[in-house]
Length: 193
Image (cartoon, rainbow, N blue to C red; front, side, top):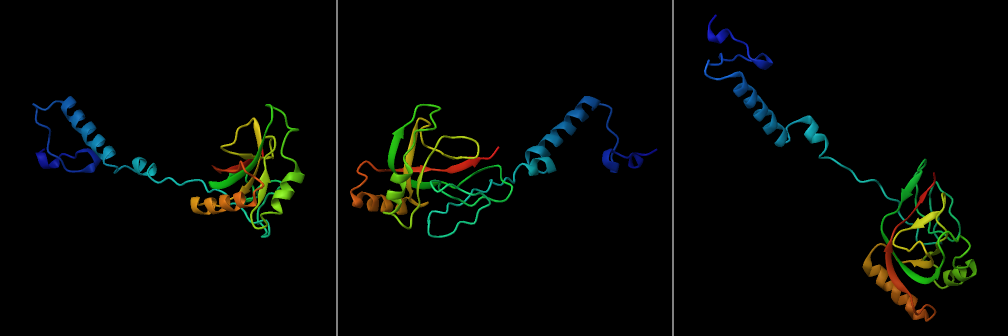
């Protein structure tokens, strides 16, 4: 049998391994080649981890005069957003809000919040921007990020850009009714489980 008749791994023609090269040396070479292939990203497994997509976030329905197409029914005091059908836990894109009023609520106290009368009075000042208020965080209710669990807020939606939020803050201050108002970036969402 001559050297051209030897079949190597993967069915390729190969030369016989000289006697001075041991089995361990051949194995080390195979491992090194395999490691190089993995590090260079040529393996299918390596490629599958490179493509990642972000979970879609709900867009806010910030104008109360425009209907909001959503699979969820919101309370009047909620900031509505678009929720796809069959969503169980879902949150929104980041947005800005102007905090108009805040009340302290001891932990677990679901009876303390900004009154609906106060919210409606504020809503009458900003007809094209939703005024919303937070309640106790319970399943099926909305949560607001970047807000203390020991406080309930009343706020007006101020858009998704800082420039729009600053214009809204100026409009709020111009009313003279909310002297302590301030800007806050947040998300809202719900856990329907």
